[in-house]
Picture 1 (cartoon, rainbow, N blue to C red):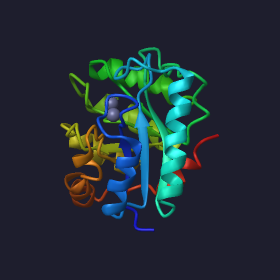
Picture 2: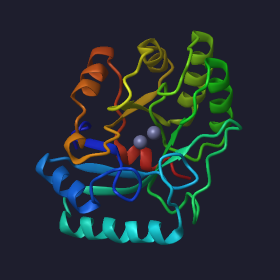
Picture 3: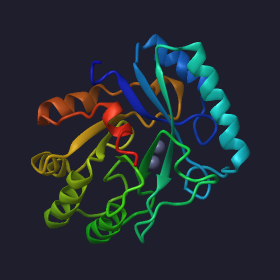
Length: 224
Ligand SMILES: [Zn+2]
Ligand SMILES: [Zn+2]
């Protein structure tokens, strides 16, 4: 499989996205994507007021329908879950194990030291396979914190996301993480149909910095 024909971070109308899962799958089919990750937020994670078991089960039914309509596309049942300041992930009704893939993301502003400290705790026994928009809410960045984080991420095999909605400000961290052996993933963070699979800039960044893009199947296998 070509490592770049995927988009692992797409929001549907089950959280704060506008597109239905069937529309997302249709769009992915048009774009010849091989793997997509529907990664919704569920309350109490920021980004959705809804998070009951019913919602999650209805959503899963839609994902299963899309899978049978587009058997060539691997459609992952994912979630984007808040990393909290104590390093734990926000709860999801029914637990995290029900999902194929979890994106752990900061949705609160933190400075460099707080970020490294929360992330170090989160990475001790990581419950997520992708670190979403790693600097999207970072108010400062220090290389010494970057080193702590890069080492911890490299030890776990988790991918650092190159996100389509949040441009990485501190690309020096990406290079540092590469030197520590970290891998990277692509996610548009789409909230509308038009941006699904829109990852040209991120692919170029990966190629310019010679970042290794993870295969989705490798990330799935991290789930213990
Ligand atoms: Zn997010
Ligand atoms: Zn998102």
